[in-house]
Length: 165
Image (cartoon, one colour):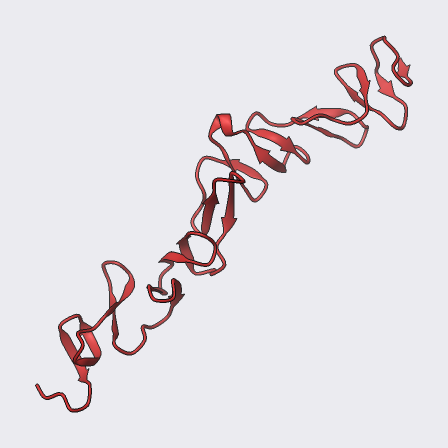
């Protein structure tokens, strides 16, 4: 039956200004549903509280401990993303070479071959003067104060002028 306005019966279809939800005509689809092309309210997937369609979630259910990332509900943010608790969303790091960041422009770990410059919280291809690459932490670490360039913390490859060894 085609329903108009607030018909009390069970409906199969609604007039052009309404949506069909559980055999009733409603003004709009409620949270947890989305309107399809036939103006029917379709349930979102189980993890999704608000969705755009079957593939795109706009808000995940916190009760299921899911986080929103690129329109999907995930258990944990992927590499290259950071979690914002206020919005329950994983956001992409600004630096594309960043594996972990918090928030978006403070990198904490980098994709190889880049290394973490702790002074700028960014990923770089080489360390600045007076720093060396620590392979264990994949970060730039300071040389001893006598070194202009070094292989590790205590081994200079070039000394600061006027320093004799």
